[in-house]
Amino acid sequence: MLKAAYIVPHPPILLPEIGKKEEEKISLTRQGYETIAKDIARIRPQTIVICSPHAPAYMDYIHISDGEQAYGDMRAFGCEQVQFHEHYDVDFINALCSQAQKAHLPAGTLGNQEPVLDHGTMVPLYFIEQAYRDFQIVRIAVSGLDRDTHIQFGECIYKAATSCGKDVVLIASGDLSHKLKKDGPYGYTKEGPAFDEAFVKLLKADALNDITTLPNDICEKSAQCGLPAFQMMLGAVQHQYEHCQFLSYEGAFGVGYATAIIRMKMQDPYVALARKALETYVKEGRILRDDEVEDKTLCQQHAAVFVSIQEKGQLRGCIGTLQATKEHIAQEIISNAIAAGSRDPRFPPVQKEELAHLVYHVDVLCEPEQITSFAQLDVKRYGIIVSDAYHQGVLLPDLEGVDTIQQQVAIALHKAGIDENASYTLERFEVIRHEECRL
Image (cartoon, rainbow, N blue to C red):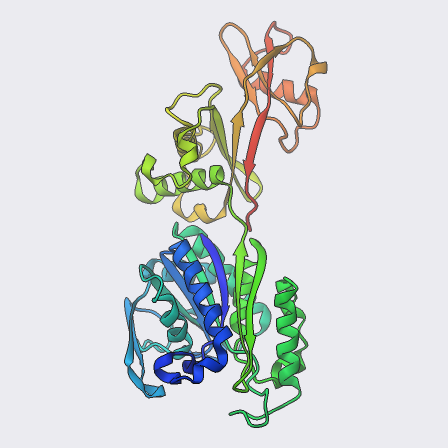
């Protein structure tokens, strides 16, 4: 699951071993990097995806570095002793290639497979690894393809992060304009400061989606290198994006450097557990243990739950109980999520390739109460239980396509196998609904 994204520059001079005190002129950038490294250490991701404009790149193809590991050092900047040895997340790479293929995008692992890291990858890793090291990487190059293709590929990153069952963060490594000063290494053009001002304004205004509105002429003439990586990042975060935390901007050396943290919407712990339970069962054939439940408060509550699963807007499974049957609510969710995905008699068991497309709802049931009249029902607020001496039917509240009390009761009776003219008892109950919004 994609936990966060980050905008960072990649000036080798920021490394003290290379800058030799010159890095002090961009101290805000260093502070931004340190904040980002601490944030990543807090999240403890298993995978870090890095989009770099200096990885092996092609005009008509988005290249994903392949293999099991890669090496690099800063010898090109006079500092061979600063070295890197990274391991690639092969499972994530395969999942990402699969998503790109499904989206009919020209992306994958074809092409250059030299296991040498670029400075657009190594500079972020230098700071991250001072705070946290327990991760694998995925390195992605930008391309000469258009904005929309980069954004669509970013969506593939999001889907791969969701399907792989790991905690993932994304690094969009890119400098802003290289033409901010006449005495800078790349000279000056008026579009340089214009691009940086517009881009930083978007970050400060928390208007990340407006990256797509930056004028083409300014983007092209400003000599920026980060925009395609930022577009990939936008595609990855756009459906879960909550807040952009601007950290810093500097242009002391004639090149623009910005840092920012992109916060993602926190997923409901009930839904997250249901997803994790079914994905673990389908992928590994085992049931989650209590010590794998991230939100420990779920191991301290008792209630009955229903877990519902949808795929492409259609029901894919729903299983639950009217009374608590396990030691705590976490076990209820785990058990019912697995049952909804594998033992609902109306559907075949969920397959691995379906997992990335499923949407989960978890309903926590309140105590039922017996009623005597339809007037005491409300299809949006109350679920119902119909029963006789031998049969029982249940229908949750606020279901799509169930708009009247008469419909609700009729469906529940049909599920129970009770004739609508027979004698039966009627109970109502409320639920606390936990749901998610997905691509």
